[in-house]
Length: 342
Image (cartoon, helix red, strand yellow):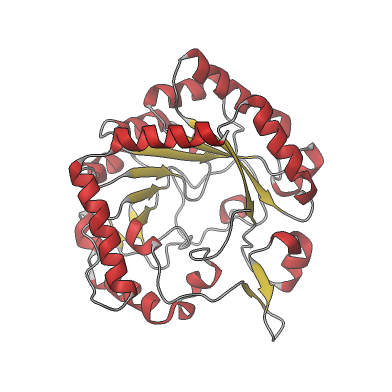
């Protein structure tokens, strides 16, 4: 699996790369190093990756997800493809890829193929994260023909009881059938893409199934199988006791008994340089941890990307993170700089 994953990633990266994008990547990395070591402050003109929220809707009720809980404090809805077309017309010479996931289940978008093709026409990397309940033959074909580069599929348990403990309302059999269907259609189309990555989020109830998960991924011919530590929507000792396996945790107990992320949280954030997030209605966010758009830089319905990316509000946010990251509430449960993969 590792060889296929690496070879596919290199092939996709080579297809995307241009001299302008390579130069921009070096500029992004260099300006981040400059800021990290307090040598100067000059955020790049654009990020390398753009996270896009196709929809806030979801077919499952996962208990540590605001989509699953229907707990949004911001408007909900579905992305207008014309908005993405407008944004990518500005960003595409510099951008490396578009990630079609934030909150919600992307395959519920009625024009998902059009969204992917909008990025594919600029030879950008494209990625999708899905719970895989809607991977019908029609949907899989739509994604294949649109040129999707990568898909991450969540399989959080290897028995129905274990799977549905977190993926409330879900069916493991439907998911496994969808994964097999996607792989079979990819083979039928003689396409190396999308690269199919399976992901298991490690909880107390499924941690003993990691070996079975990896074995099944090898058996069906997935390109990668990764295990990730779980994020709690509200990190409390009670939630930790109910959900988190101590041997696979990103959290630890603080001296006062509260729960906190393991390790020292540095006053910097590479994520703020390399990526940005767009909600379905065009709010530009600093990152994917701003789930309710509390720190939105402004609306892309009314402004171009660069004016918001370098707005006074954006600069205040970045400098606040580099000055004292722990004082920013969404940063206190952020995985940037934390070991999350097992």
